[in-house]
Length: 511
Image 1: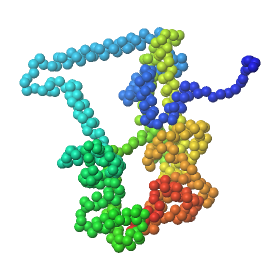
Image 2: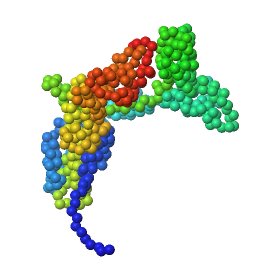
Image 3: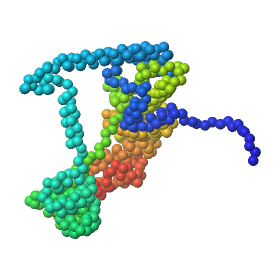
Image 4: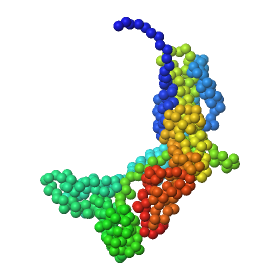
């Protein structure tokens, strides 16, 4: 093998640290971005947070900051350093003098002797009382912790008059109850989980289970849906004639009720339509998942990145970034002025590197905001019909359309629209919500799938519940409006909207 040197000319794409940081910030959600900014503030002394009180700050300070940002080499000359040191020293001396004056005033205001009936709070109104306030706040914070279903049941168990043996069984049962209130373990498995020396039998476990099922919420610890509903029905007023009919349906014909086969129900129970309707109304008032009301909620709150509003004067739509999403940052002018040219000491190198990183970070943040603003503006321009008239006026839109409009790659548009939210007069939506596929219309145009879903929801809401619309009928109604949609597509959209099929939407009386 012959060893030789060869020259080869080619092109390759290399991602600089600045580009990597810009891409990282671009795809972060609001909460992740705030965390990233907090970490940058902690790790880089050159960055500082602009407080609200500093918005109308000293113009000279702002002017010096702009000069620092313009200087690519990072630096104020070494001759300027003593001036900043003198300024900081004068500030420090002034603060120290103010502090000494405050201590002197405080000492002078306290009398040498206090009367026996005086209170310390009456003499010194300082930070002493804040400790009690903080303590009360911490107590409130501890007491406001979300209560789980198990905590709620154990609290009732401690108030009940059960023997130690029954409490041991009850604790095992409560530990096996799912968040929705259903007993997740079989009775046999619970019995096997006890110590064999205790000799606990199934009858004892069932007896304690029946006791727990009457805890609040009633029906918790149920093993089947019919058992859960019957427990709740047994606590209702027996004077209601519909109660006996409801128990009969739940005990023997719950499957027919699930598929809404009312004809079979009336024939087997020998109930008239009015009687069956009264029993069903009573059943619909029950809670099939009693534990869900006690379990901690998983509500998540969304902070919009973009705010869209209508200018009433010009009747145009205005797009702006949410100023509360991310805090405003700037470069600390005092620290930046300490950087000296031509100084290769460790301290100066540290300051110069952090100054450069701070500039990159601010530039990446600005790039993220500019890109988000461009994309959001194009989306609003394309979906004005939705803002004016609602979902039925939504137009088809894909990532390629926005990418061409803002002259960016589709992958960039995908990053911008992921986990970014827009606040509109019609609600808060993720930017990806405005992108949807399309189907053809009879006139040769296109209709958004989002608009089709809105039409399906509207048709189902206005249907006769005694004769609900089938998927084929909905497809025919859309065909009459010039929208060509197959029955299978209607079924897919309907399932995506969590709308049950026509046989499950049937009611005895029209709404």
